[in-house]
Image (cartoon, rainbow, N blue to C red; front, side, top):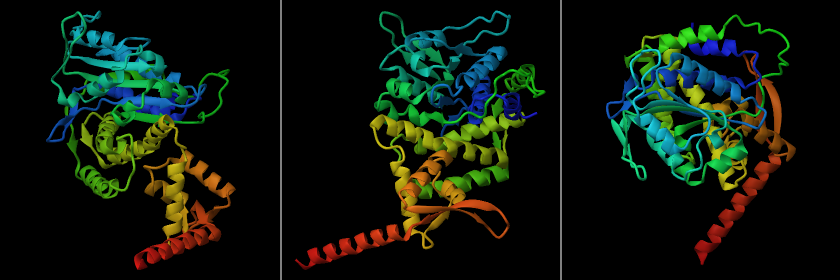
Length: 412
């Protein structure tokens, strides 16, 4: 049974957004496989550790996915688990100490850890260096040893550090705990910002769940996953798909504005996610086409969340950049229209489906576009956005005026 699918079936009746549990499942896998599996990138070794932040308004049930992940990793009991409040110095000291297992298992000597922070803003007691250190520890592929000099104490030496984190926060608290220098400085670029604004549904919890999947089933599955060791290999179609995506992305990268640095690292994000998706599917350590395809979709979905946090930090309008992108597409498109699905496929780095819907509703209210449900030749329906003629007329008038001024200047 696919572990991620099992988690989603087990939590089907939860009010928490589905994507929260999806990333909770992947974080659980990352927490238990640690740096025991890897992908050879030839210039460096890539491990599947990830940082995940579930972001949404208060009351959106962000806690249960974090709690589920923590419980599953604690059940496997092969890494240090951190929750509650802790100083960054306390985290480093704990990671540097060998841990003897109560169950008689082998001691934990390498600096592996799983951070579960249902209230991320209060997890790490205020320290200006906390996010910088977490950023540094994320890049475990570059360190056999990581050394931190503590005040009035011997240096803490972390052997082969590998940290996975899942946390939760609302936007206001996240704004308070993440300084602006952490936006462009690397922490946000390394973090999967999973934003949602609606519950998956309403459940008063007065009836027993219908799902036949139990938490014991999940524990058995993730325990088996934790035993997997070694390097990943590509299938031919998996490699071809990734190379094709990478080529297309590289051609578009120069035109994409991103103050977070997330786009610069999305290639590794996709590979980490593909490894986790593969592990959830089977123990074969093969990166298949379906694994890569799912990873691309999942990672493209979280890019707008990272931008939302960055824009919120700098006080800019959240919808303004995406609005400009959609209008530019409609103006320059010869037919002055685009489908919702095509807009999401083409401009995934600028908005997700929720943000696109808000942008479209705003432009519709301003009478800049019309919105219609159109059926194609195969009978499939899609929402289309049509530019209002008056908007195109105003744009062309501005272009003519600008050209006239330019001609006048050249005559002087």
